[in-house]
Image (spheres, rainbow, N blue to C red):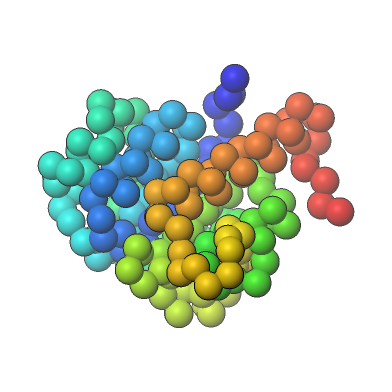
Length: 167
């Protein structure tokens, strides 16, 4: 059984464009206790019918914060440990050592994370391994994979009474 984290994960979507993907991530947040952060511009309205339908009846269980820009988000969380997900990062998410309270940052379905985010020093870039010559995974699938790997590591660390080993 999944236990709630005292310091929940933060799932950060930078300029998401497809309402059902964001709705699916909202539902993931509701069932894992993760926090959802959306960074504008969004490709839809928060009131979008498809967004609401994809989140089903979980919206009242989702902690949602909306930021106008990535720098505004960074200002609110200057010391956060951030993992920047990219299909082109050299490091696998399985090499990452996630901790409670980490921020998992994902880009839009169309362009991924902007170059200034990737090069800006705000986090460590990681990728979800996939076969060669494939463009990318679906956004909500990627967020699900990353979230459950982070939760797995945090739960293992908690069960052992210590942080997940770094070596």
